[in-house]
Image (cartoon, rainbow, N blue to C red; front, side, top):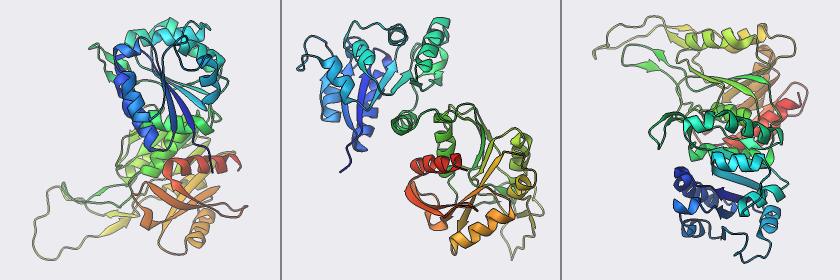
Length: 389
């Protein structure tokens, strides 16, 4: 039986501390084993009882009054991953300069595995040269930093420093339990979502793609260090805030323009968007009124994937997707060869819009790999396969 991943959740004294209660709940429901450290300042905002009830496990706060005589060592050894959230400027500074004057700072010094920091603070405190220098020190030591979001802060300032959505913290935890920053510096373009071709101001031609797989790939690539440009059409979930760039392109023509303008400088291009093969020849200026039979004349749209294959630069890797209802491997292999792809991912259309999937990863030189799971884990496995190309 596989051991449950062990997360040591370390909560610091910021107003966002209350949001970590929900993070603890998500982790517990997902099957993680959790122990919690609350700093003295954190207990001004949240209670140990909150975390004990949610995690069904121990909460620690003192070097001197713990049930274990050496808690900073036992907790450091126990954890597979330490998560510091919210990470205050003070805690970042203490860790960067090796102070060990309380339970949390001592645990961080004794821990030898990955540490994930989730900074959340006033925009000016975050932008301070001192804080940025301290974060750089932690990065150089191999720690992971999940950048804060941008928005209205509790102090009534607006800017970068906001505690991230817990869904992104959760994905970062999943990623850094198993993967490091092995894609640092790699430039990757990903497309996602269902294209929309307008008929009139009210109606359009689209498809059932949710964009979840493309977003999962963009998220996993970015967390592993890649510089990700996401070109997305219609999607059903939020775009990760920390991508290098995210540009909406709803129609095939818009997506063609955005993709081709960036393609030349990309090391990997992953075309996951479900784009229309046809569009109306005429777009009506006004809403079509209900009446008798209506005939729409359709014309072909640009084949973005084929165009990328024709102009693929040396060393560039091109990855496509094939959504099919029958003969998955056969049809996908034809597409891989005709469009000069390095890899293609085939999946059955019955999985459209679902959180999990079963896919075949197909290349010209290796046996197809059949894998299944939730789309974030599939994204990581696709990346691993790409690294072997």
